[in-house]
Length: 127
Image (cartoon, rainbow, N blue to C red; front, side, top):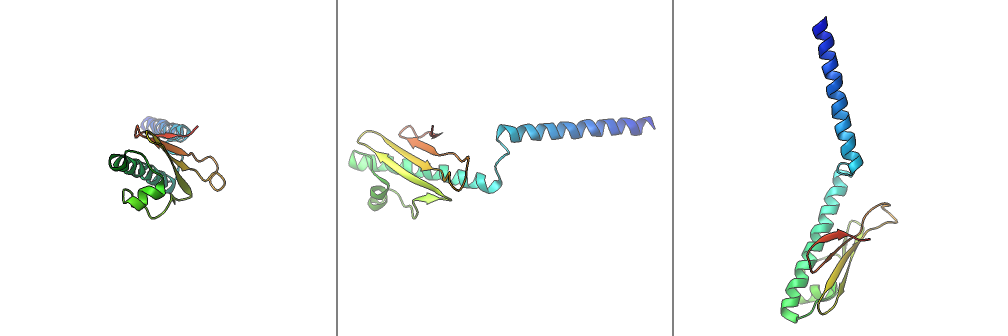
């Protein structure tokens, strides 16, 4: 009888620990997104990196940065769409810098985050 009670206590402690661990992960935001949202977000970030790489290639050939249309027409970027899953991309070039913003569809996806990348090649959430 004591071994059965001991086993029950250990099982309850294990279940509470498991529940506490995963509830903290969701509160921290690491498990809050659905798998599809995570895949979409990774795709958006990969698109930003691809656009930034195209900006670098364009800079070496033309000594300045370019708009998305100029990147596509020059062949530096092969992108069929100007967005992904509601996100829209906007390039803001100048002679010495660029910013590419992935605008989040706040109207259809409240609480989503827009992202920006520049010549430092670091993706950051917009403020």
